[in-house]
Length: 357
Image (cartoon, rainbow, N blue to C red):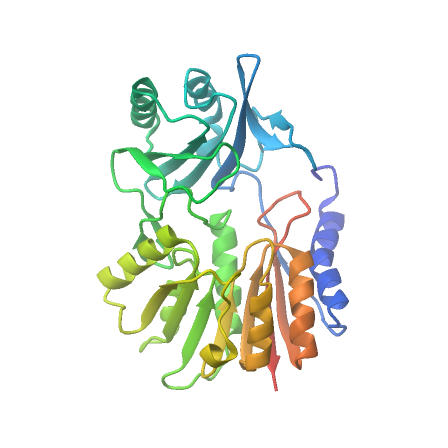
């Protein structure tokens, strides 16, 4: 953590992470990189490991390059609503049989309250289920879910332990019901900055019936913003690998009367990237890959020669690797925005716009 740095030095270093990645990819003429600064107390997603050691619950984050979990009782970047849950949550887990040795907790702060997903190494007992329901009532949680998997999330479908009201949030003005533990941008301000940078990176003139391919769409953070670019609406084809996220996205498309303009398809883009043929005809590709980057998918995007590529990244290293592929295919970098969602850490969100021709 880097709270001790003076603000100017910290901002220079943070934007330098993006600049260094792009220079390493061969983009030497960058100009000034805008940094959207983060502030404490805004993080709306909690993703903690749980350990039971000597009868005591340890709740916190993994140490640097370690399997050890550092117990966390305070966090200046967490939203106050999530921070207030730490002590009662630790007390709850202490008495739960579902955490024999290890587990994990993910809480997304939705518009309707904190949505909790608990992963444990043992199935919850009846007493556990009652305790979780009582916890939800006491602390204003709309939903509590459970999945097997310790602190290594797998493909297990989450089971709803209790749902007291809809677990819902707003994405680009559209109400969505994300699945338990769904990926959401870390802060509300960061999400707005990403959307602004993505929309600002689209071509000023798009074909009357222009189509945009959105890859790694999640449950719609960018999808609905893209679909509302103009009065008639762009046509957006969204792909996502997580079945529950695609289901949430499709539900909202159907209910919002968007089925003629927005499509959602489940596809693991790591194992089965879209082909050059499938990408042909799109005016732009918007992608928001995971920490590992776009892998084989970026190669087919480059080979397809899509005119505009808007790349949303949470990892400067993999962004640099993928940007080099675009550089070698003849793309120019026309915009770069650094977004400090991960305050005082070496992680950085960024939006980069590449154009060909």
